[in-house]
Picture 1: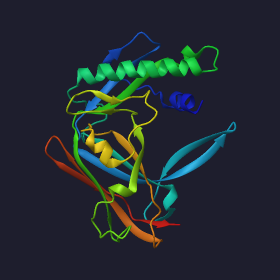
Picture 2: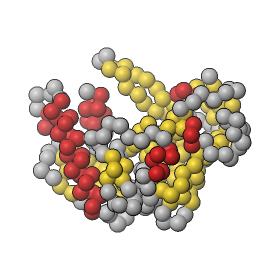
Picture 3: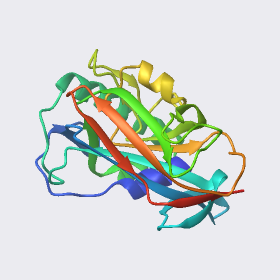
Length: 245
């Protein structure tokens, strides 16, 4: 039911040229973009309860915010650096696989739905973003203060885990194939495992600390460096935050 509610909320209508239409009560617009820019944000996980169901949201942290390390979320987003509707060359093989997997996922949700006419829930245009450039290297480091006993600027990849992909799939830039789709509940969480897949850059990834740092509180910024298959290294840094117990 949580997934169904999330799906209903996430369906938005944007006026754009249609790239793909299927025989369901919705149609898909693919939005391929290069990966020329990376942006990172510090967010806090917030839990809310509605109709005896628990939901999670992630709110932006302002400069110098105190945040429990267990609630800290690092959001990494990529873009081509141009307008919202400025798309790049599509990859038809990946789009076909994504569409088939998405249709299968929706069918599963419909079968599990308790709504009398579940088809009405899925009447909409679905925007699916993906990046056409791959990721060769990805590194998270801390600035301003050491963390986990590691010097400033040292890789902290092993202390972070990926817990959410948005959109919820992983594709390979080498094979131009879908590796994990919407129907795969379990996806790689370790950064090194994700990199080993020769992944296309994710439009958005949510990461969290998998270990509580010692010697808290500590005030710092996190930096992300990403090397892509188009031959560039892109970077961004979070605002200053203070991690606490």
